[in-house]
Image (cartoon, rainbow, N blue to C red; front, side, top):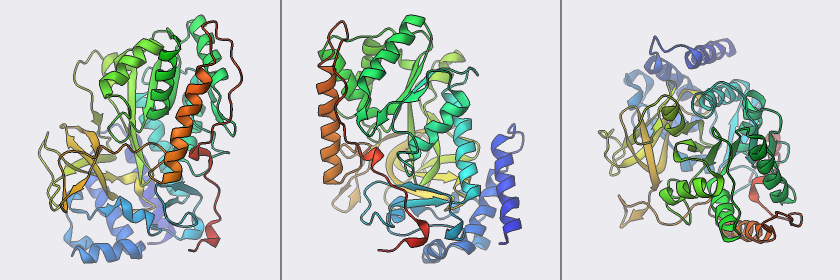
Length: 421
């Protein structure tokens, strides 16, 4: 495919993302993107041939071969000349940090990633249409250039943030003092805020605040957005307990607690429906709605070849047109089920006697991945948060935050032209 043809495909996808939805071109766009990626990516083409699948034999987006998410940790999967890469995100659990576990995007892919997730944030996190202060429990992108959350949150502040928006993780760690002071200031002013961070960080902070008698009553309309949730689990507390602590510690009601599922291998994030449903007066169990351009389907756990009916537990597969620079279809190891026009994730799959178990893994997977060093750093972050908050008296006079080492700011900029193991 020539550069001009690739540009035409990009423009069609981008137009579809922002269209009013009158025409559903999802199937035709997926098929065209699959044909392009089949011809452009040698690794993906070999995978499809092993599956006995060729573009001329595929008529439905559900039949497009899904590339395993783990394969991104072993190979560079791109459908464009690698020298045109302008964006890199790291996956977790890499075995070769100089090459493996990197997801590359060219200029077209970068624009799709930023545009699609800006639409998601506007539709589900800031649906009222007005700006508010956004407090980010993550490092800024200049400190973590390969961290998707850092890049995405900079864009979120750009498009939805008001004065007072800021990142609260630096090289010295989580800025507890500044975070507490900022929250108190907006509490006093009666101005709603959005707090965005990893699920585990919130759990650690809640536990320490509760132990030290620290509470907030954030203004009505404030919201908390957590990413991860240990892939469906909520670390040291249940999902229900997490919502309870959001209310008891921050004064934020359950419907304003929004969980986000994001993966480096899949461009588009999926977000709980709870906040938008509450604003629209809809009462129903929360779920993660599909997007017009990105859909998640549960497949059977035995062969991973059969889409499952609504409510039946299976392995989640992502079909995402924003994955133009890589592969449209990605098979994950996440367990979940379809809800009609969306899905819900319940955890990560575990294998028992060579078969995928219907009971998810009880091993917590935090935002730092599974390596021993990351587990150590995760534990250290918990200890540090607890230690610093314990210094906060009821009058909230406390010492500056000590150093917190976090792998979120370890990510470095790698030179694309010099990548070998």
